[in-house]
Amino acid sequence: MNKIIVEDGQCLLDIAIQETGSIESFLDIAKANNREPSWELEAGQVLKIPLVLKPKIGAYYKENEIKVVSESKNPIGGISYMAIGLDFKVSKQWQDQQVL
Image 1 (cartoon, rainbow, N blue to C red):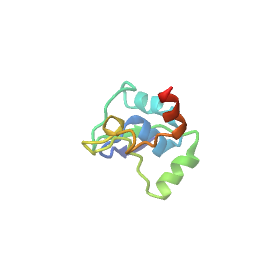
Image 2: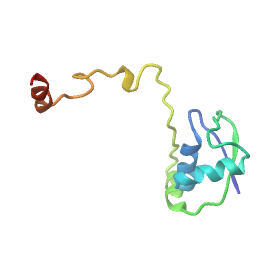
Image 3: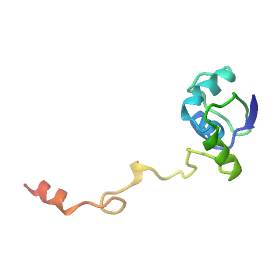
């Protein structure tokens, strides 16, 4: 069983993809660490990583030193801060349908 140190912003799904190449292994990682799948990780935590079944993707991330992090540290962002017409293009066809 391998061990890794959690990076800031990582969740179990990130770790599963990065280390095993399989999103499904997040359940195995949670179980190996005696935690629930919804467990929130903290930067610096050490996690046990069980043996993998699909190592090619995980090996690619390791060889290229790619860290998978899904949490954004941008305090203002995401779809709730986006504006139609600025961040999204509205098609002429949609606009014509709204006039009817």
